[in-house]
Image (cartoon, rainbow, N blue to C red; front, side):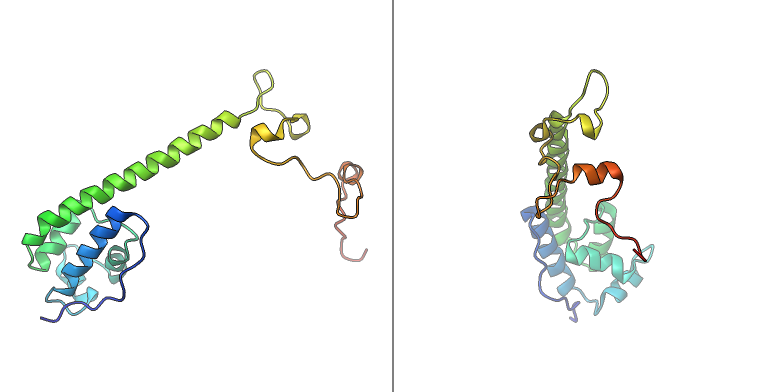
Length: 162
């Protein structure tokens, strides 16, 4: 039995994805294939090494059909059920993570500032904390006031030849 040689297991922060990738890599190590290229040539349609490498690195999850085809090519049918369960949990974890990010994005809407029924111009904003940012920088470290320079259109940027 040759088996595909893979480097060290990748560091993955999501525990369910990590469990899936670990088991998937184990399947490949115990396969009759000597390389990802050889495995990819057996799949229909053929898979590029890069796409298979993404799976072994945990960069993406396979779809169910892709997983089934890989397991069948490796001739390890008993591994299919366990890998499918791990894949479902990894997908659930990913879905929950995305939902959490959307919830966080939605919470940013609480910082929206409106004047009447329109968005304010930067000059009209007075409550910077409500926006979740610091107020504009008004003075240089030298103590010089930037207001006059901004209104004049020069913020100290020198053009070539000046």
